[in-house]
Image 1: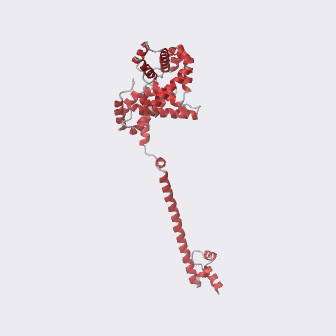
Image 2: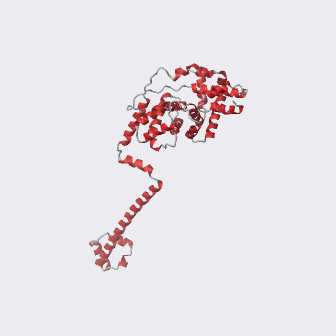
Image 3: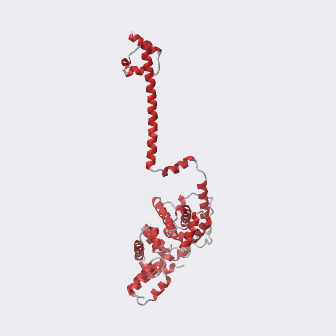
Length: 170
Length: 205
């Protein structure tokens, strides 16, 4: 064996799957220098020590059966239909932040739009009530500019209010 | 590898597993259970825990079969799952040092009980010859950083090539060689008196 390859062969012995034939040849090689001899002995000793240290225990004889039982149990659990809240929970992590943001924005817009429509309807009802009241009382709408007065008129014609307005005018 | 078949054969079986073939899966479990349990036992030296984690490795293999690409070596795919589960367990133990793996698992009445063909032969019997050396080696291995311990276990127990170990660890082949070399240098330095005296020979059963 050429001396320049000694180092490579020693590295192989220290690596995975050392070749027993290669080990034998190195042990019989008289051209190894004393430091190489020392390293060879150390590497072989460490290999033996690691191989014999705490030998792996025997596997249980039903290991494969246990794995298959676990796989079957897991497959059954996944094929069973899950309640809607569990499906939703599984869905939620799949949604991206952008998707969640869009959904939230749409939800907020819908709620705000509903509130706007409701307040517009209430405003129309109030305007109608004011119109009816002023018609009954023969009032100029400008005299009802004060919000408090308008507010107190309520949402529909009130005979008592009409009588009071008439009395004030007279 | 002693227990594993040709890589192509394993990849072909894995493609069958991807189609839901339970027989192909059983063949793979039978072929690889020994190297996987041995590898895990080198990282987490408790026989029952090693089996439980190995069981999880194969369940995970079944679940992730759909992600397997035949370009990847089967051994790399399998040992990467085993590495990840070992790291999870090491980190879980670091967070909860007093708990064993059993403590974290619910009792499983639906699974068959573990059966040992030779319960009289325990690792404790086999290593009783040189307790001091066993303790010293345990200490030296336990002091190694996580990555070095994994690399050494893959090198000695997984019987993988440098390329496969590099794939499992997610580093280059030169970095893997360097990592294993450094690890062995640390161990040789710590165990020098025992290596020189030949005390390790009495470890052989």
